[in-house]
Image (cartoon, rainbow, N blue to C red):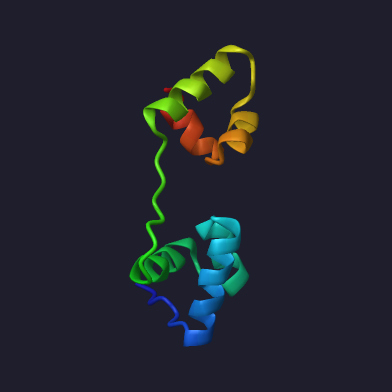
Amino acid sequence: MKRARQLRPDEIEALIAHYRDTGSVTTAAKAVGITRQTAGKYLTDAGFFTIRRMSDDDIARARGAREAGQSINSIACVTGFSPHTVARALR
């Protein structure tokens, strides 16, 4: 198994800054050049709660939008969740 690259303190600060700016672990990880999983570990270690799940209200709004004819991708853009997460919640 490949071991994750260790970040220098300045890289951790950059990761945190990108996460605060975007709210996206994936975007922050790409900016620093590491995997999403490694970024999540560093952010969790820094005290951030990075796992965001759809609430019952989010799912109800997504279901209503889907019944109104909106695509999974457009619902994902509006809600801030990935298309995969939206599709899984609507199943």
